[in-house]
Structures are given as C-alpha cells and as structure tokens.
Image 1 (tube, rainbow over the protein chains, first blue to last red):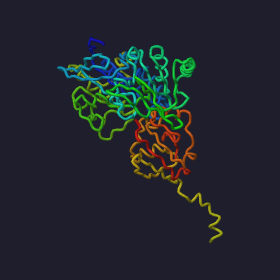
Image 2: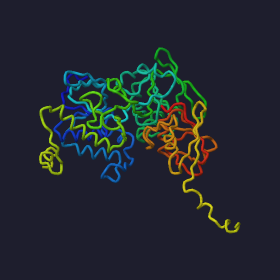
Image 3: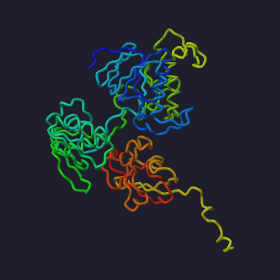
Length: 342
Length: 124
C-alpha cells in the first residue's frame, strides 16, 4: 500500500502503443506523464496478443511486429522519461477541485490535472472458466492469481492449465501446499520446457499429482470448494478433492472499472469529440481503440493522430496561462532540445 | 456445335472466386449458412456475417482462443489437424474436444464448400 499521493500533470491509463505515443505528444508540449497498466510490461495488445505478428499499416514501416513497434515507441519516448506503474489497474476516479484523484488496485494514488484513457479493448483480466456457479467460489476458494502464497499453505491445491502461469505456480506452491494437483487437457505443455521437466520430476517423486482432463463441475458449499469433476480425454469422469483451485486460461479484455466513472458510454466504448478527443467530462480524454466517434477506425495510426490532438487541449488545462505555438520537430530548436537531439 | 463446345475450357469460364458455403450451428440448434470467399478464414467469414459466439478477440492472431469451433465429423479430415501453435492456444479454450479448432486457423478453400461447424456453449 502506498499512502503518498503522486502528483503529476497527466496520468495515462494504458501502456499500449497509443498510451506510449501520448507520452511523446504530451512531452513535446512540456507535459509529464505517469503511465499505469495492468500488464507487467509496456505494449498492451501488441505485447500480449501479437508480439511476433506483423503489422503492415503503421505509416513509414513496411512491416513491424507488435513487440518491435513497442520497443521503437519506448525508444522514441525515452527523452520524456515517463514513470510506469505496471501490474495494476486504476479502480476509482474521484473529482477534486480542478484535479482528479486516481486509485489503483494496489493502493497507489495519483493526483493529476488531466486523465488520458488509452485502455484499448479494456483491461486484461484472467479468463473465467464458464463453469456453472463459479462466481460463488471466486475470492474464497477459486483464485485467478496468487497475491499471497501463504494463503495456499497446508491446503489441497488444484491448478488447471498448461502454460507458464500454471507451471510456475505449481512449482512455487508445491513446497507449501498440503497437496498439489495439476490438471491439464493433454500431456504437452506450452510452458517453458525447463519448468515442465521440473514438474514431471516432482510428479515422479510423488510431490505433484498430474492428471489429464478438463474440469467440468465444481462442488462445495458457501464458496468453499470440496471437489471438482474432471473429464478425462477418454470421456470418463472422476472426482478430484480440492480446497483451492487456480485456473490459468490466459487473459481476456474487459472494460473494467472505467464503466463506473460516470462517463458517457456507447457499447463499452467512450464517445469523444473529434477535435480534442475529450470525453463527456472536461479534462478526461479517451484515445485509441477505447473511444468512438463517427467514422472511427480502430487503427494504431488513428490513435497516434488522436494523441497529438489530445495533447493540444491537455496543454490548456495544465498550463492555462501559456499560449501554445505549433512547431515542427524538424525545425524547432526548442522541440529538438526536449528530444535531446540539440 | 457440340465438338467445339467440348474443347472449351469450362473451368476458365467459371467465376474466379467460387464461394464456399459454411454452416454455423449454435448451441441451441440455430443454423446460419454464410458464403465465404476462398482465402479468408472461417473466423473472418463468421465475423463478417455477425455470427454470434465467435468473439475473435485478437482478430485472428491465434492468440486468444475465442473463435473456438467444433468441426462436424464429416469435415474433420478436409479441415485437417491443428498445428502446434493452434493446439497450444486451444489450452485457453473451454470444453476442448477432438473436433475442436480455432476458426481463425481454418482457411476457406473450394474444398470446404458445405463445411459445417458448431459453436461451443461459451467462449469464456
């Protein structure tokens, strides 16, 4: 928990390509930004969904992968030295006199004059297996992440999945859990081969129980799991006793708390004007895939344009007494100084 | 007349793009037949025709498993087996069966004219 409030000009919610480029455009007009993202690294969808996939419509780059574009943007915004806050999601937005107070799920607080929502398709959240009644167990005996390992001490733990999260947590929780069972639909794993090898070693030594199958039903009472039904690849089913379950089925995008901030919404998108890309509330902007306006195209290049225009208006809020003179990076000495090239 | 006609290359006279008809069956039994152009993916055909239940969150990058379908038995050989990346991504799908495929990884060809796929109850 952070008790101190971080004071800054602008908070950018979302560290995808558009959030990153917003750092650049704001930086050119002397606005310092903090960037908050739920993922553990910059890039948003580009890093999470298609790091290796080619993008063909970023102007000037014939082809660029999601990761490469992220890396290039990180390089480009370096002179503006943004502060990143990863692994957290902005939960609440409070209006104060002339400023906004944002609080993340990690307890970090930010006071800023301008909020830029560049949250793309929403916040990446763990996928919830569509098992009947799972909601009742969530937070009590079904968890999608491990915040405190101690909560799993001396428990019968069931981990479901075959990726790195499933394998890493199997290995990390095995020493402290009473029992650890890993359920995966096949005997091949996506996870790092070294982790898979370690897991099989622990299966060999009797410390981890590995079962092939898919969980189909949950059993328990008052949020406390007692067992799950697992369907084996041959179609037969068996009951697996369990106290806590950790399903790891990857991430999906959800709009999340943004929906509760009192902004006008249009089918999970935030309507903005096309002059400033400001939302229904002064000082709160929405750029990139999360906004909507007549003719909107969810293209990275559109988001870049939106961030440039947003920055012009943000300048008015951050420096109400200063007049902004439009300049080109090619010829302006002052812009080149900011970029560290002069 | 008939000998000359016999020497015609009938194939060349056909329209360049023969559409393939694909049937999507929902969990509740509702069927929709759409026309897909060879070269596009079954996911793209679904999204283009607003077929419910094909979320395709990642837009076809084989990175999300939200375009999961079950290929009807008779079509499994023609559509083929998932490649490694797709099989890996199917780990993120729910209720995976031997007929499971990610529709973004099935390329439409003329040979798939008549293809039938079922949409799972939930895509997460």
